[in-house]
Amino acid sequence: MRELKIIPLGGIGEIGKNSTVFEIDGEMILVDAGFKFPSSDMPGVDFIIPDYSYVIKRKGNLKGLVLTHGHLDHIGAVRYLFEDVVPSIVVGSDLTLGLVKNLLLGKLRDSIDFREVKSGSIVSIGKFILEFIHVTHSIPASLGIAVTTSEGTVFYTGDYKIDPTPVNDLQTDISRLKLLKERGVIALFSDSTNADESGFTGSESSITKNLAKIFEQSTGRVITATFSTNIYRIQQFIDVSQKSGRKVIFDGRSLVESVKISHKLGYLKIPEGIEVDVSSISAIPKRQITLITTGTQGEPMSGLVRISNGMHDGINITKGDTVVISADPIPGNERVISNTVNKLFKLGAFVYYRKEDGIHVSGHCSQEDIRFMIDLVKPKYFVPIHGEYKHLIYAKKIAEEEGINVHNILLLENGMGVSISKGRMRKIPRIQSGEVIVEGNTKIPVKSEEEASFIAERREMAYKGMLTVVVILSRKAEILRPVHIETRGIVFPRGLEGEILKAVKEKVVESVRKYGKIKLQEELEHEIEKAVEKIFKQHLKKSPAVFATVLKEKKK
Image 1 (tube, rainbow, N blue to C red):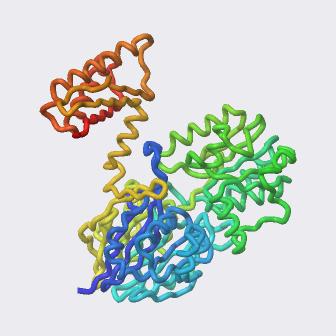
Image 2: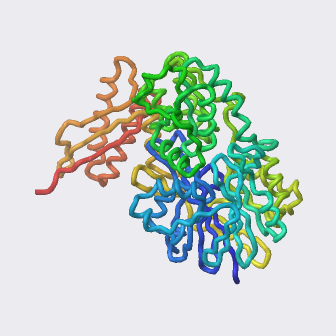
């Protein structure tokens, strides 16, 4: 039986990591390949990408990668995907492809067929016919995709909102969406990130007046932070700086590269003479400086966080400086963002970060945007995507209110998709799925963040401190040298450290004498760890993370 399968690999029940497989007659396309930022309780993790094992095992069937827009939660995993499978064609808008090329090594970049499209473009990839339709978001050149196969047309919105006054004056292409409705849309896969927010999402242009007031009132430097690919917000910072007589400094490698690419393609307008280098900051009056940097999510190495920690090479906060953080916190990052804000206040800056400050609007659809989209394309089936579970539920409720049969509204999970055949959609069994933790150049597949044992160990060390025990034994399981103990991050009651560590050593010796001749090395190490934890709980009511290592004398 011929059927179209649509399987999300990421982006369902979470913010970020967006990636979806479309498959028919053994041919596949992949829509988006993004990452998500780790939560603050995942120390050492750079970011998280989808598990692409389903695609990799069928790499010969992958006909193309299709990209909706240039935000990293939609393109950030491309370079890691390409380590295992490189599609014959990569399709996206000129800005999206420019940002993707910047993520890739030159040799790989030069070997790929990049196909630029714009609103109205139609591209055939194998058994898929793709029509691209402009939607408004917080980055230019964002596209929804109408995917047509023998089983009908599916409209995949990508990230969107219905913005009547976008910064670049280019509105959602409603006329093309109406034509889609006339042809018939079997299913709408819709962004749902703000589905629990009433009304329409605010227009990008609506915050310009608030930014202008803040810039005019500031007696010192204005330090702004946004995502490196939030091109519209960067444009607003530039425009307001020009009107208030300020020079602009772009800070941070990712932001500088985004600015360079966007400016080259004409999506970012930078007035001549307004940009200066950070090295000249001391020569310019503070009242005439705007710094545009990253760090809205408290990323440890970002510009704003380094400024808050007094570790930035070019700028230190002084009294009278103003900080503008223009982004919503990603769930899980609230605490670390709050810490950054508090540090900036302590250094003497005034920080604008609250929703009521009117310095940020989301790029995602709220309730009335979703309602508008449903009424515009009149789908038979509705599938909410790109949101936490609460957002999916709210989007489902909106679809019901708009007259879509409750049985035609499907809530999916990562790895659990749907098939469409003969005009009917049904859920299909879950494929092998999970996620991949990225640290530097290392990729670590896990079923879920919670099941990453090394993350749990890091948390334990961070929250409790750490103690290591090293025991050297003879072949007869006798202790050859004094037990070695090291501690990190443990707070001992005053005057009791020596007493507690003496008790620990005695307990280690006792454990070795009791179990050394009858247990395997790993089992003995576990017994030592349990014994040491017991000593700490007796004295401190809690135990640090304990790691025991037993080394045995080699046979001669």
